[in-house]
Image (cartoon, rainbow, N blue to C red; front, side, top):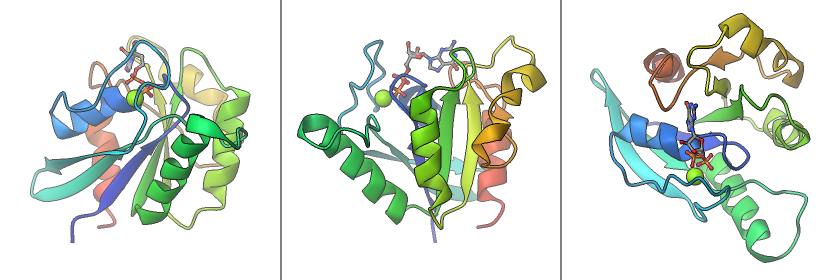
Length: 163
Ligand code: GDP
Ligand code: MG
């Protein structure tokens, strides 16, 4: 069966950009404005002979309990429940934020395997970029660049290993 991989992270970390690379389409809306992708978005991808389904999610605002932000959180939580694996994206340039912590708390309660990816890592020192994200207690942070492709193939291979 085709595993479903969901991309989770606060707005603007690069989920839609990574989605495009993993599905080789421009289907996901990539925005300079945070939070523009307002719903889940599905696409198909393949590494070698291994196909997968990838889900882009909109913003993750679990502290807001009404309006559009609540809807986005609900969609995201549902996508996590339906997923076989989660890629949790953080922004290596901005660094660790309180919102990342909130999402991490949620993901640590999930029964799904979670892969922590430090995005926007092109041209950076990988161990230095990864260092501050160990405290999220979600395993070893993997530095990638969704925009340039660095580390993306290795990440998806790792995610698919158990399927
Ligand atoms: P989303 O809100 O999480 O879906 O983030 P987007 O994919 O819309 O990207 C938000 C911004 O980050 C855009 O300006 C992207 O061009 C930029 N971005 C995404 N991935 C990378 C990356 O790997 N490196 C850099 N430098 N910028 C990126
Ligand atoms: Mg997006």
